[in-house]
Amino acid sequence: MSRRYLYLLSIALFCWNCAQQGSPSGGPRDETPPRVLESEPPNYSTRFEANKILITFDEFIVLDNVNQELIVSPPMEEKPVVKLRKKTLVIQFEEELKENTTYTMNFGSAIKDLHEGNKLLNFEYVFSTGDVLDSLSVKGTLKYASDLSVPEDPISIMLYEELGDSVPLTRIPLYVGRSDDSGVFSVNNLRADTFKVFALKDGNNNFLFDLPSEEIAFLDSNLIVNAEFARQLLMEAGLYDTTRQSPDTTHLAADTLELDGGIQAGGEVSQALPDGSEVVEDSVQEKGPDLNSIFVDLFLFTEETQVQYIKDYKRPERRKMELVFAMPLTDTFRYSYISPESPGETLELLEYMSAGRDSLTLWIRDSLDYKKDTLRIEVNYTAKDTANHFVTQTDTLSFLFRKPRTKSKKEDEEEIPPEKLEVKTIRKNGDQDLNRELALDINLPLQTIRDTLIHLYHKPDTIELPQSFRVSADPSLLTRVWISADWKSEGQYRLVLYPGALTSIYPVPHDTIDIPFKTRDVEYYGQILLDLENVRNRLLVQLISKEKVVREQVVRVSGICTFSYLAPLEYKIKVIHDLNGNGKWDTGKYLDKIQPEPVEILPVSITVRSNWDHDVTMRLEK
Image (cartoon, rainbow, N blue to C red):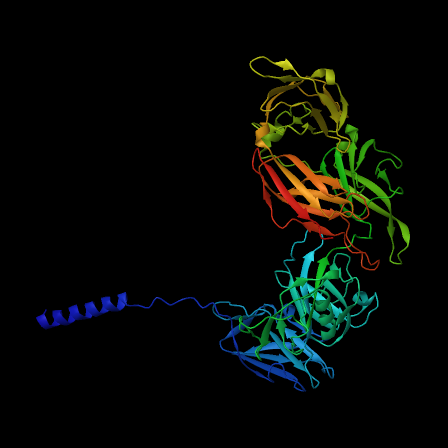
């Protein structure tokens, strides 16, 4: 090989290596959503006569679920057809537009760029078929009435010019908006008028409140929407400076300041551009109130069903049948056994009705009956027919039990050991709380308790001392027994149940049960001293941890509400205004003009520390 060839080869390899090292890194990831370059006709046009709209973006876009995301206000009987042509969005109308009407088309989260999926959220195209663009708005927040949480899914906000009570059931709205994932909504480009205002989780996408499971919110009174009314509200709240003049036609993005009656006003001025984006004016400029928007708070709820039916029924064990109803049962409820062999034959049953009378548990006493794989029960209960009349509904239910399959044939052939009454209590190495009774759970319904066969011992050292105690059956659960005693801090205990201490309705014995356990140290617990101010009605004050209500107190006057013996966990405080005094939170009913009972939640959670008192003040607003 010649020297010249070797020299050229080395230069080529050197250049190749340099090229490898100098390859581009790709640059930062694009996080900018698509931007509108132009619209034809232009956004915010008046005297609109076109039947097609072309909106061109600065990059290629895709449409994501546009048929569900696109909201046209006022609604159209036939939604526009939306297509893509390279970087251009094509909107074709399928029906004639109304005269002298301002239309708003909100695309929600349907528009995103092709490569990175960056979404152009809530892009609006607005036009008027008349000479002017309506510029008023209804804005606000939407929360669930029961716990003040924010709906995860978009909820329709609906405005009606007709003011009859039946409009959400029979008419589609004049204007429609949508809440975002933070519960904020804005229905824009409204004319001055008086409206009924609703929020609806529309189960069948027809803009009608026509399904019992649909969630709804409504204002108690009709809402006046005009700039003069906004000025009046601001003046009453002391927020309007009569020396400042604000134009009524500016598109505004407002902050919220709460006013009486759930209506709010406030503002940060921002100018709307033709492409739908907004530029907030210089922060040095004095901020003024939003005279074009009325702010409202809406609280979403599901009405209690008025349709009685059997929600579920099952036979989880041979001896046990369960029925769950949609509503509490009335005194007309009846059931009977249907025997395929002997008509008129009955079952010997032990029945347990839940405290709310919406579920029933039936225990089959006779072994000849519960060994049958299928049992048929006829159930009679009161319900409403399609004419809203009370009638007796009859359902025939087949309760089937199938023995679980074993892993092998050998297991099937093995002799089944005698059945025992099982007793469960504190888990291994668990601690008994000082302020609670000791729970004993059995697997079959309780019949008798013989306390002479139950012994409780306290072990302050190596010696066991008999401890006095009380034993009782749970009035609301057939399979639970309570042991109560004056528990000592960090005490060592031993509970002994001799055979026959607990008997079930079935001839199933239990062996001697020996349960050692200990109690918690008193210094393990913390305490919350809640000072409630401005109490004006009966309250249910709840302490919530890990999404469960762990304590509840009834409060009628302002003052200190004490929650003691609290485990060191994080807690929320929820206050229910129990206006009807029935001891529970009640939902609303639209046609009866009943709002859900108000709920207030302390804005911050409380992290309880062991051996610590936490002083908390909560002033109620309702």
